[in-house]
Image 1 (cartoon, helix red, strand yellow):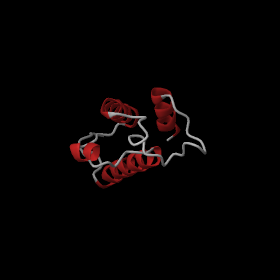
Image 2: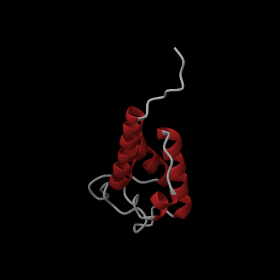
Image 3: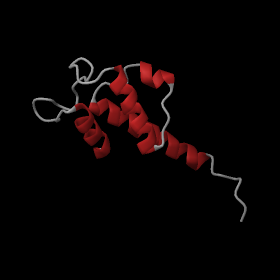
Length: 93
């Protein structure tokens, strides 16, 4: 999840520290706008091979680094669970 932190810090020119904790709402602090949010979502989709639904993107789920990391971790866990319960049966020996 360090890739997410690095992306946000480099893209939005901030540094997470004691004065700007990871729980900070990036929208309320004026760090990220809707264009930056779309860029972040596209980065996450490419980097982690996940897809965000419209609901994911509009429910204020990903407003801080902490919440973004938690949401990505949940999506990755769901993908892993789906792969275990639906193994690829189309392969031939």
